[in-house]
Image: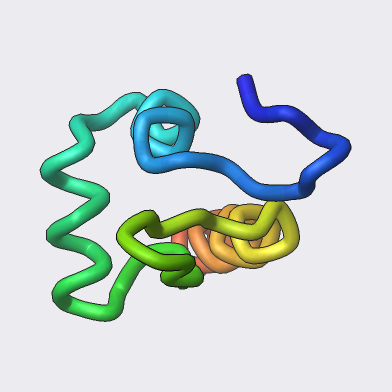
Length: 65
């Protein structure tokens, strides 16, 4: 998985975390519905704190619905 000392996940790591494709994660970013990434040059990285926030949001939605 990700190098936790950096606190950021790459696109492939985020896709693996959610057991989906990289294209799906890109689509979420396009729709602004998934975890928020940070653009650094040509790369998009995802802070671990943002992945944790999105995981909590998904759990809340699952419990409500």
